[in-house]
Amino acid sequence: MFKLDQAFVATSHAVGDLPLCHVRLQDDARYPWLVLIPRRYGLREIEDLPTEDRVRLLEEAVTAGAAVRTVGEALGLDVGKLNLGALGNVTAQLHMHVVGRRQGDPAWPGPVWGHSAAIPFVQDKLDRALRAARTALDL
Amino acid sequence: MFKLDQAFVATSHAVGDLPLCHVRLQDDARYPWLVLIPRRYGLREIEDLPTEDRVRLLEEAVTAGAAVRTVGEALGLDVGKLNLGALGNVTAQLHMHVVGRRQGDPAWPGPVWGHSAAIPFVQDKLDRALRAARTALDL
Image 1 (cartoon, each protein chain N blue to C red):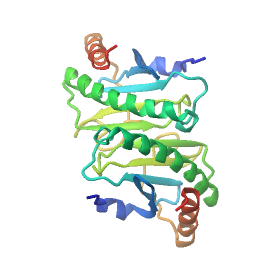
Image 2 (tube, rainbow over the protein chains, first blue to last red):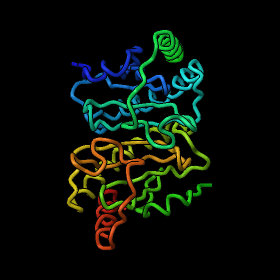
Image 3 (cartoon, each protein chain N blue to C red):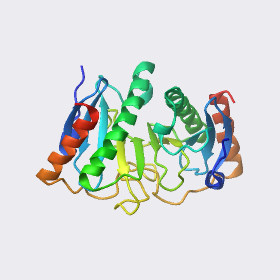
Protein backbone atom coordinates (compact mmCIF):
# COMPACT_ATOMS: atom_id res chain seq x y z
CA MET A 1 0.00 0.00 0.00
CA PHE A 2 1.19 3.51 -0.83
CA LYS A 3 2.53 5.50 2.09
CA LEU A 4 3.90 9.00 1.64
CA ASP A 5 7.32 9.67 3.18
CA GLN A 6 6.79 12.32 5.84
CA ALA A 7 9.74 14.29 4.46
CA PHE A 8 7.44 15.49 1.67
CA VAL A 9 4.92 16.81 4.18
CA ALA A 10 7.54 19.04 5.79
CA THR A 11 8.57 20.66 2.50
CA SER A 12 5.44 20.76 0.34
CA HIS A 13 1.63 21.02 0.23
CA ALA A 14 -0.82 18.47 -1.18
CA VAL A 15 -2.36 19.47 -4.52
CA GLY A 16 -4.27 16.25 -5.27
CA ASP A 17 -3.99 12.91 -7.02
CA LEU A 18 -3.56 12.15 -10.73
CA PRO A 19 -4.21 8.57 -11.96
CA LEU A 20 -0.67 7.50 -10.99
CA CYS A 21 0.89 10.25 -8.91
CA HIS A 22 0.18 12.17 -5.76
CA VAL A 23 0.99 15.80 -6.64
CA ARG A 24 2.49 18.31 -4.22
CA LEU A 25 3.44 21.99 -4.44
CA GLN A 26 6.98 22.59 -3.16
CA ASP A 27 6.84 25.16 -0.36
CA ASP A 28 9.28 27.61 -1.93
CA ALA A 29 7.75 30.89 -3.09
CA ARG A 30 10.71 31.55 -5.40
CA TYR A 31 9.76 28.87 -7.94
CA PRO A 32 6.59 27.34 -9.38
CA TRP A 33 7.46 23.74 -8.53
CA LEU A 34 5.44 20.53 -8.41
CA VAL A 35 6.52 17.14 -7.11
CA LEU A 36 5.00 13.90 -8.45
CA ILE A 37 5.06 10.81 -6.24
CA PRO A 38 3.80 7.58 -7.87
CA ARG A 39 1.20 6.04 -5.55
CA ARG A 40 2.76 2.61 -5.46
CA TYR A 41 4.53 0.78 -2.64
CA GLY A 42 8.28 0.54 -2.22
CA LEU A 43 9.58 2.40 -5.29
CA ARG A 44 13.07 3.93 -5.45
CA GLU A 45 13.99 4.06 -9.12
CA ILE A 46 11.99 4.61 -12.31
CA GLU A 47 13.04 1.10 -13.38
CA ASP A 48 11.01 -0.21 -10.40
CA LEU A 49 7.81 0.91 -12.15
CA PRO A 50 6.14 -1.43 -14.67
CA THR A 51 6.36 -0.05 -18.23
CA GLU A 52 2.76 1.21 -18.36
CA ASP A 53 3.35 3.23 -15.19
CA ARG A 54 6.58 4.69 -16.58
CA VAL A 55 4.61 5.97 -19.56
CA ARG A 56 1.99 7.38 -17.20
CA LEU A 57 4.66 9.04 -15.05
CA LEU A 58 6.16 10.87 -18.01
CA GLU A 59 2.74 11.91 -19.32
CA GLU A 60 1.84 13.21 -15.85
CA ALA A 61 5.18 15.05 -15.75
CA VAL A 62 4.31 16.75 -19.06
CA THR A 63 0.86 17.66 -17.68
CA ALA A 64 2.54 18.93 -14.51
CA GLY A 65 4.86 21.03 -16.69
CA ALA A 66 1.86 22.84 -18.16
CA ALA A 67 0.48 23.29 -14.63
CA VAL A 68 3.80 24.71 -13.46
CA ARG A 69 3.57 27.32 -16.21
CA THR A 70 0.08 28.23 -14.99
CA VAL A 71 1.25 28.45 -11.38
CA GLY A 72 4.11 30.66 -12.55
CA GLU A 73 1.67 33.04 -14.25
CA ALA A 74 -0.48 33.15 -11.10
CA LEU A 75 2.60 34.10 -9.04
CA GLY A 76 4.14 36.53 -11.53
CA LEU A 77 7.05 34.10 -12.07
CA ASP A 78 6.78 33.35 -15.77
CA VAL A 79 8.45 30.08 -16.74
CA GLY A 80 11.14 30.17 -19.43
CA LYS A 81 12.43 26.61 -18.98
CA LEU A 82 11.16 23.46 -17.30
CA ASN A 83 13.53 21.36 -15.23
CA LEU A 84 12.69 17.72 -14.63
CA GLY A 85 14.55 15.74 -12.03
CA ALA A 86 14.33 12.39 -10.29
CA LEU A 87 17.14 12.30 -7.73
CA GLY A 88 16.12 10.73 -4.44
CA ASN A 89 19.53 11.05 -2.79
CA VAL A 90 17.97 12.57 0.33
CA THR A 91 14.39 11.23 0.26
CA ALA A 92 14.54 7.77 -1.25
CA GLN A 93 10.84 7.33 -2.15
CA LEU A 94 10.54 7.68 -5.95
CA HIS A 95 9.47 11.18 -6.92
CA MET A 96 9.88 13.53 -9.85
CA HIS A 97 10.40 17.27 -9.57
CA VAL A 98 8.91 19.55 -12.22
CA VAL A 99 10.34 23.02 -11.68
CA GLY A 100 9.60 26.22 -13.56
CA ARG A 101 12.78 28.20 -14.14
CA ARG A 102 13.47 31.67 -15.46
CA GLN A 103 16.66 33.58 -16.29
CA GLY A 104 17.83 35.34 -13.15
CA ASP A 105 15.95 33.15 -10.67
CA PRO A 106 17.99 32.56 -7.48
CA ALA A 107 19.64 29.33 -8.64
CA TRP A 108 19.83 30.15 -12.38
CA PRO A 109 21.36 28.51 -14.39
CA GLY A 110 22.26 25.83 -11.82
CA PRO A 111 19.81 23.29 -10.41
CA VAL A 112 17.41 24.31 -7.62
CA TRP A 113 18.12 21.18 -5.59
CA GLY A 114 20.52 21.88 -2.78
CA HIS A 115 21.00 25.50 -3.85
CA SER A 116 19.66 27.44 -0.86
CA ALA A 117 17.04 27.31 1.87
CA ALA A 118 13.44 27.54 0.69
CA ILE A 119 11.41 30.69 1.27
CA PRO A 120 7.99 29.36 2.32
CA PHE A 121 4.83 30.79 0.76
CA VAL A 122 2.79 33.38 2.64
CA GLN A 123 -0.82 32.20 2.93
CA ASP A 124 -2.45 34.17 0.11
CA LYS A 125 0.26 33.28 -2.40
CA LEU A 126 0.00 29.66 -1.32
CA ASP A 127 -3.78 29.74 -1.88
CA ARG A 128 -3.26 31.30 -5.29
CA ALA A 129 -0.62 28.75 -6.30
CA LEU A 130 -2.68 25.75 -5.12
CA ARG A 131 -5.78 27.07 -6.89
CA ALA A 132 -3.84 27.56 -10.13
CA ALA A 133 -2.27 24.09 -9.90
CA ARG A 134 -5.63 22.36 -9.21
CA THR A 135 -7.36 24.21 -12.06
CA ALA A 136 -4.57 23.32 -14.48
CA LEU A 137 -4.59 19.67 -13.39
CA ASP A 138 -8.40 19.35 -13.31
CA LEU A 139 -8.31 18.49 -9.61
CA MET B 1 17.43 17.38 -39.42
CA PHE B 2 19.14 16.50 -36.14
CA LYS B 3 22.20 18.55 -35.34
CA LEU B 4 24.13 18.04 -32.12
CA ASP B 5 24.88 21.20 -30.12
CA GLN B 6 28.68 21.50 -30.06
CA ALA B 7 28.54 22.10 -26.30
CA PHE B 8 28.05 18.34 -25.87
CA VAL B 9 31.21 17.60 -27.86
CA ALA B 10 33.30 19.68 -25.47
CA THR B 11 32.07 17.86 -22.35
CA SER B 12 31.37 14.27 -23.42
CA HIS B 13 32.30 11.39 -25.72
CA ALA B 14 30.06 9.66 -28.28
CA VAL B 15 28.91 6.18 -27.22
CA GLY B 16 26.49 5.47 -30.09
CA ASP B 17 22.87 5.76 -31.16
CA LEU B 18 19.79 4.10 -29.69
CA PRO B 19 16.56 4.13 -31.75
CA LEU B 20 15.66 7.61 -30.48
CA CYS B 21 18.69 9.04 -28.71
CA HIS B 22 22.30 9.77 -29.39
CA VAL B 23 24.15 8.58 -26.27
CA ARG B 24 27.24 10.24 -24.83
CA LEU B 25 29.52 9.54 -21.88
CA GLN B 26 30.04 12.65 -19.75
CA ASP B 27 33.78 13.35 -19.50
CA ASP B 28 33.96 13.31 -15.72
CA ALA B 29 35.89 10.39 -14.24
CA ARG B 30 34.19 10.88 -10.87
CA TYR B 31 30.77 9.58 -11.98
CA PRO B 32 29.41 6.95 -14.37
CA TRP B 33 27.22 9.34 -16.36
CA LEU B 34 25.43 9.07 -19.69
CA VAL B 35 23.62 11.80 -21.60
CA LEU B 36 20.73 11.01 -23.97
CA ILE B 37 19.95 13.46 -26.78
CA PRO B 38 16.83 12.68 -28.84
CA ARG B 39 17.81 12.75 -32.54
CA ARG B 40 15.06 15.13 -33.60
CA TYR B 41 15.25 18.71 -34.78
CA GLY B 42 14.55 21.76 -32.62
CA LEU B 43 13.58 20.18 -29.28
CA ARG B 44 13.84 22.05 -25.98
CA GLU B 45 11.28 20.47 -23.67
CA ILE B 46 10.00 16.91 -23.25
CA GLU B 47 6.55 18.23 -24.22
CA ASP B 48 8.02 19.03 -27.67
CA LEU B 49 8.34 15.28 -28.33
CA PRO B 50 5.36 13.37 -29.74
CA THR B 51 3.92 10.90 -27.21
CA GLU B 52 5.52 7.79 -28.76
CA ASP B 53 8.95 9.43 -28.55
CA ARG B 54 8.38 10.41 -24.91
CA VAL B 55 7.73 6.75 -24.15
CA ARG B 56 10.88 5.81 -26.06
CA LEU B 57 12.93 8.46 -24.24
CA LEU B 58 11.95 7.11 -20.83
CA GLU B 59 12.57 3.50 -21.91
CA GLU B 60 16.00 4.51 -23.23
CA ALA B 61 16.66 6.32 -19.94
CA VAL B 62 15.88 3.11 -18.04
CA THR B 63 18.19 1.17 -20.38
CA ALA B 64 20.85 3.85 -19.88
CA GLY B 65 20.40 3.48 -16.11
CA ALA B 66 21.37 -0.19 -16.37
CA ALA B 67 24.34 0.79 -18.56
CA VAL B 68 25.42 3.41 -16.01
CA ARG B 69 25.51 0.65 -13.38
CA THR B 70 27.72 -1.42 -15.68
CA VAL B 71 30.03 1.54 -16.36
CA GLY B 72 30.21 2.12 -12.61
CA GLU B 73 31.32 -1.48 -12.03
CA ALA B 74 33.96 -1.15 -14.78
CA LEU B 75 35.34 1.98 -13.08
CA GLY B 76 35.09 0.73 -9.48
CA LEU B 77 32.40 3.35 -8.79
CA ASP B 78 29.47 1.18 -7.80
CA VAL B 79 26.12 2.92 -8.25
CA GLY B 80 23.82 3.20 -5.23
CA LYS B 81 21.28 5.59 -6.73
CA LEU B 82 20.41 6.78 -10.21
CA ASN B 83 19.77 10.47 -10.82
CA LEU B 84 17.72 11.48 -13.84
CA GLY B 85 17.61 15.08 -14.94
CA ALA B 86 16.42 17.12 -17.91
CA LEU B 87 17.45 20.70 -17.22
CA GLY B 88 18.72 22.52 -20.31
CA ASN B 89 19.32 25.85 -18.59
CA VAL B 90 22.81 26.10 -20.07
CA THR B 91 22.57 23.95 -23.22
CA ALA B 92 19.05 24.32 -24.56
CA GLN B 93 18.93 21.28 -26.86
CA LEU B 94 16.74 18.64 -25.18
CA HIS B 95 18.83 16.07 -23.34
CA MET B 96 18.49 13.80 -20.35
CA HIS B 97 21.25 13.05 -17.87
CA VAL B 98 21.44 9.59 -16.30
CA VAL B 99 23.99 9.74 -13.50
CA GLY B 100 25.18 6.98 -11.21
CA ARG B 101 25.55 8.25 -7.67
CA ARG B 102 27.03 6.74 -4.52
CA GLN B 103 27.18 7.87 -0.89
CA GLY B 104 30.26 10.01 -0.45
CA ASP B 105 30.72 10.92 -4.12
CA PRO B 106 31.98 14.51 -4.52
CA ALA B 107 28.54 16.10 -4.86
CA TRP B 108 26.62 13.69 -2.59
CA PRO B 109 23.76 14.13 -1.69
CA GLY B 110 23.35 17.25 -3.84
CA PRO B 111 23.00 17.23 -7.62
CA VAL B 112 26.10 16.84 -9.82
CA TRP B 113 25.03 19.64 -12.16
CA GLY B 114 26.87 22.87 -11.37
CA HIS B 115 28.68 21.29 -8.42
CA SER B 116 32.34 21.46 -9.43
CA ALA B 117 34.61 21.27 -12.46
CA ALA B 118 34.75 17.90 -14.17
CA ILE B 119 37.83 15.71 -13.87
CA PRO B 120 38.33 14.34 -17.40
CA PHE B 121 39.00 10.63 -17.92
CA VAL B 122 42.52 9.41 -18.53
CA GLN B 123 42.65 7.40 -21.76
CA ASP B 124 42.55 3.86 -20.38
CA LYS B 125 39.66 4.59 -18.04
CA LEU B 126 37.82 6.30 -20.88
CA ASP B 127 38.30 3.23 -23.09
CA ARG B 128 37.07 0.99 -20.29
CA ALA B 129 34.00 3.18 -19.65
CA LEU B 130 33.08 3.43 -23.36
CA ARG B 131 33.50 -0.31 -23.83
CA ALA B 132 31.29 -1.04 -20.82
CA ALA B 133 28.63 1.40 -22.00
CA ARG B 134 28.57 0.00 -25.55
CA THR B 135 28.38 -3.58 -24.34
CA ALA B 136 25.54 -2.75 -21.95
CA LEU B 137 23.64 -0.85 -24.65
CA ASP B 138 24.29 -3.45 -27.42
CA LEU B 139 26.10 -0.83 -29.50
